[in-house]
Length: 482
Ligand SMILES: Cc1ncc(COP(=O)(O)O)c(C=O)c1O
Image (cartoon, rainbow, N blue to C red):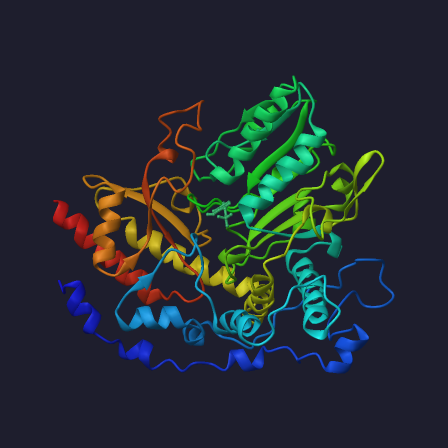
């Protein structure tokens, strides 16, 4: 075995040889001219004429400008890691950033720093227009029908809390029920407990009803069906589970849920990994984290279907938040500003546009196919390893599915220690409980799904070679354990 120090001296001819594609140039938007900005119309801004207000034009069809083979050159940190034989396998925590995203963020700070939504000079108005453009682009990317259904938040956690504070607090009354999974990410568990606590203080006792997950890591739709009652107001689910790597579309429940039940999808792990269409999902709410879809941290996307707009309270009343005061108090204004407020994360929004460029230039079906192939290879490679146990997920599925996330344990070594050893050999993976609330599963406290584990997660910059090296290393560690 080579020591980490030795490894850091090794250069891989294969990765050094990868040319850096000129994506940054090709994807750069035509800069708005001074005339555009003075006239208040930047290129690509706003809905095309003839459409209803805020209607989103048809989704972009994926072009074939990128092949997965030449993608590493677009991710400087991945290239740098490869030079020291270090492999990033933690994209479910956050994805690496491609050059166009890095450059857009840098350009904002180094060339045109201003606030949006306020000033009347070109730098400011240009940013206001850019944010409108990115909103429309994002709406198209996630399959929203209207741009005012897309809210920019501080992250996916902030987006789920916005639903809790702006919708649930306003809408729920004593006796109402929320169906949720205690095995979900804390961001899709704690906000509902917070709502229950807050409403309880005002004598409105609501009930949180947990549903089970299956051995393949999916939301148990039979259990959900059995637990739906006339008092169910919200059903919340992770679209792609962050530990199990299982996809939940709730297709089996189509037509079997009362239309008055609001559906919430936590798409933090699916956004930028598989094609997501919130309209096809029948979502009332959906949340995304820009930093998990090649964008920057500190930006979330909250989808709120129009039918719930009238049920929403302002989320962050303040500057730019579409509220006003009259003699009766605070008067809510229009979406999406109703759930925004204050200065947005402008550089992250600009970066998101470039992230969507990159994803769409590859094509989301291709991104998903790549992650599927890597997942299947990883599961097949790890399956014969003695002492290795897969958590619920694609490894337990009948056919070769996979979405870029696999979690497992190795008997005889804790997940934390295994993660430490793997990191010594250059593999960056996540270990622990992965933000599943430890005491969350009141119905099954010894649930293996809540075991501490090693999670491997991939994206477009990972290769078959990454997976094969990882599998070999895990096999060697298992062999050493005896
Ligand atoms: C499924 C899921 N939901 C929500 C979140 C929270 O995302 P953020 O930390 O960006 O708010 C995460 C982050 O790991 C996640 O995996």
